[in-house]
Length: 97
Image (cartoon, rainbow, N blue to C red; front, side):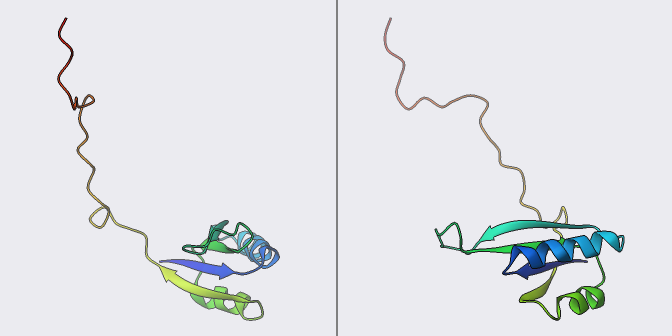
């Protein structure tokens, strides 16, 4: 089970990642735009971690953030590979020599 913590401030996300890494858990942060939003400053900072939910919720209790459980995709859930052609398709017949 993996957890995703969405923070509104980068300082909170960086502090959370530092705390989780110090405690020995895996953690990373990335910036995400809201769907349909083109404002580069309107982002959230998403922390992904494998820490137990109880510990993460305790750390997030006093910051402007929320916690979600994210299940990683299994190979059965992943999209099948796309069958691509070996060469470009011609839309018109080649010119006569």
